[in-house]
Length: 264
Length: 333
Image (spheres, rainbow over the protein chains, first blue to last red):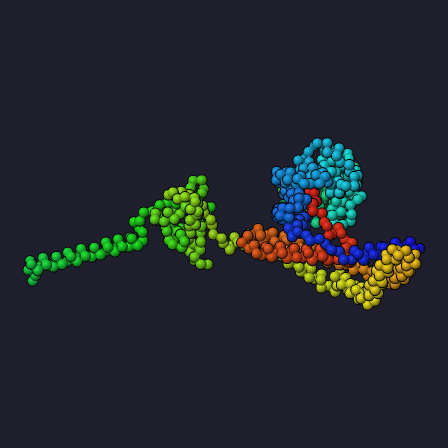
């Protein structure tokens, strides 16, 4: 009993000592870089690539003034991602090169996967360095690995996607990962197991309805229009997808719609 | 009747009168020509604007507000481009340099359009006649509006955000009001009894602990330890109602208040994006952008301080978000 009371007392002391957190002062430039990064991430979520790029460049400048090498590297990575979104491959590759400087092992893997995805590489040597179950890989890395494996028609893609589906949290980021993983699984099964693919696509669509991801939504709808057997539903999905492509001014999507003769 | 002598006299007078008249007319013309530079030496420069809509022959060309020439000719070339010939007084050539530029300006809001020459840098050297110079169109209100439109759009988004935020703040059954009400009840109860007692007991404990340390040195450890443990037990019993309040209201209050911080975050980010737009559209307004940046930083500081407070200290994930953006993956079927 006395031992328990002693432990409780120590716990209480620990709680009291935590009540007055004293934070070390932070460089104003670092603070600025972080704020700009957050804003850029928000712009990325809304697919405002150019605006995001501008914010990330400003974040990089602030990080350079703060001489924070980790933030500089992550800013270059973010710039590269904004270029990927905007379809500027050359610029993205240049930014990835810059991001490699001072990047941690995890970040190097992130950069490596992003580069391979961008160049649509068929080189599967990267798999030797990648153990999908390793705890240090965050889910965004596993998701990128899954997409790359899928591009290279490697069967391991499915297990990567399943891990993302299992481990992603129920917050906004987690829901997005789950939606992407479900869509990835639907794409894997689309030719062999239509029913399973349709289930995954519907799961992805339900998740996307909670998020602001119109481009992904359109892709899922288009996939569903290809998987659906009922003509009426098929047309409905296709029209909904084309309507989103039109709003997004997605030329590739619009031309696919025109080729298939779908009028939103 | 006029005799021959008188007639010759009248003839001479008329002659003088005509000569004087002609001399005056010539003198007047010479004087006018000097005044208007009709016979002054001139040289040509060319501009190649996208459209000839803002030009007309005879249009004044000015340098620092002084008329130095005029538009002499406007030509549409075979390849569809427009060439405008400017005829300028030679005496002003030394004031112009190789990187001279022409731009359309309006004399007042509804005045006539004229061409203003921007002399350029001395280091560029003297301009040679018949050369092509750059042209900048006038910054019209329409153009300004076009440039500023994206900013206005985003400002609209901000206003919408602020409106939503304000509605949400003022909703009597909204998260914030309910959260604040809980917080008030929670803190009120704390102030009334438990906190004071807790503080008092903790002080006693600290004293006891000090004595304990001292006692350990004096080899009287057992007796004093018993006293401390008894004291701790009684204090923990007193803490029960306090823990109950935390259980009942604390979690809910913290959860509600986290929503406030998320809303604040969203506002910060929107403000930041507007800052970027304003900077891009109106680089001449750095002060405004600086102010936006400052506001954003202040707001972030405030949010961070709130999060760092003991009430929110469990939400570490929000305080340190990832600095890497989500991967952009192409899932096009």
